[in-house]
Amino acid sequence: MAHSGHTHGGAPQQGPQPQPIKGVANVIAIGSGKGGVGKTTLSVNLAIALAQLGHRVGLIDADIYGPNVPMMMGQTRQPNVAPDNRIQPLESFGVKFISVGLISPGDKPLMMRGPMLHQIIRQFLQQVEWGELDFLVIDLPPGTGDVVISLVQTVPLTGAVVVSTGSGVALQDARKALEMFHQVHVDVLGLVENMSQMTLPTGEVIDVFGAGGTERTAREYGLPFLGGIDLDPQIREGGDTGKPVTLAGPNSQRAKAYFAIAQKVADASKAIAAKQEDVFEIT
Image (cartoon, rainbow, N blue to C red; front, side, top):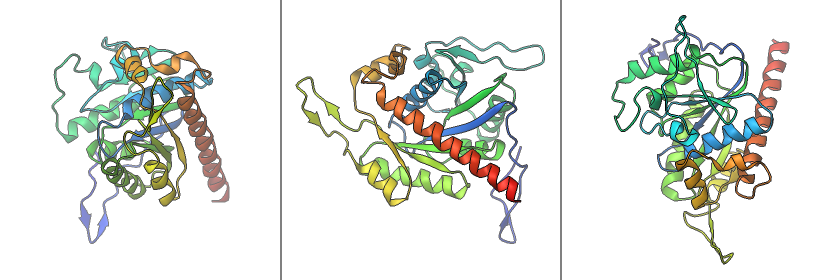
């Protein structure tokens, strides 16, 4: 296991270099400074939207504190392991996925220390039979801890998306997530404001958590604002029943915002890949 953070003479020790995953073009991390801002809902709907836009997509649920992806994807059985120890991901709605929740199903908490978590993340990245993927979306645990650092040490990330509500408290933590990605040299593709506002049946719009705060934070950091998603009981219902709203397709009013964000993520990833190719050509 790579140890990081030990300094000798002021310089951090170099651990093993991150290794790309064979057959996977882009790895996108979805992070948030705090829990409860709808990060997993975004991860699931973004993955499905990318698949519906014609991309080959995988999804890793690395949120050890609340691994909800299996419930949202409508499958909770344990994955099969091939004789060569390769893990077969589950598949729902055209998206291959794996989750720490499949290791510890039901209500049992997953209690483990850093080194073991690091091992599980590495397994999900390197031992799962992903095949050829255009995008591997990773739902990170909230905050700026061990799992995120393990991930960055294990695999080169194309970029990260940071999710927040517009509330001052959530944005304070989102800034910490932005700083963390900056420190570990991961491009932030942009910010998403979740539960932005609520439209009542009368058509009246209520600002619940401070709409617009995330967009202002994105501007402050010189980063793209990828879009806002309304607070909508049907989005919650879709997650609870294993029928995410993006299944309704890009023309559905509720799913539109997710498809717009998915397109922006795909475009930004393409731009980063092109930039990296240019760097390789120059050097």
